[in-house]
Length: 263
Image 1 (cartoon, rainbow, N blue to C red):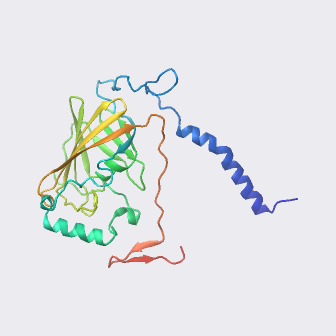
Image 2: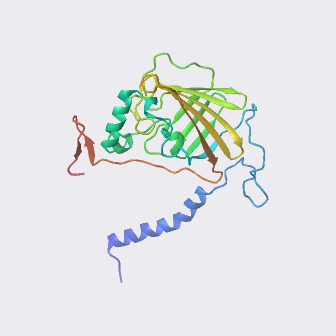
Image 3: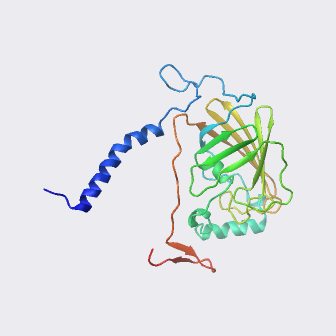
């Protein structure tokens, strides 16, 4: 019996997919070079925390954040009196609108500090800069410059803002400004273009990292918001591509969702 040409092509493609699956799975679990290991190949969690050639703690690797306390609500410690009235009013509106203004609902990137507590993060550390890559849809790389430069005085707002870092002993202190005020950066609580985020990142064990985050915003908050997130290193994992491809909807000038016909 002969297969129809279309069915034959589908069968060949499916067979190729089955044959390629084991290699793909092995690549996802490929042991990360440089991680101390026991004789059986498992990571040696009792080994000293890794360091770079210049003696700094080596943060490089893939990290899983960052629960359970603040995984879904980093603003859970805020009270009504801690938020400016206009910010509280906009927050309530966003909740009632079922988070229609969330960038995720429009296939747009979200920002810091959202990524600090929700997604997988690959850190690539060099003496002059540290790059953070997030396993999330349509997200640009975040660069933390550690070459001694200062933050811009009047930054043009961007999705991830501008970040500079400095080492205080074994702690990497990162300051970030210039995040677009239109982005709900943490939960649905609004912020202004005056928001400043300070992070104190340190290894507490070879496979554990803590990030103490302080958010200051004199326009939206009555007082700074501080919390600490914990991350675990994933020594045998490779991040995968994550793309948002919503091309069926758009938001018109009145904020209403419209369908694109013919998509």
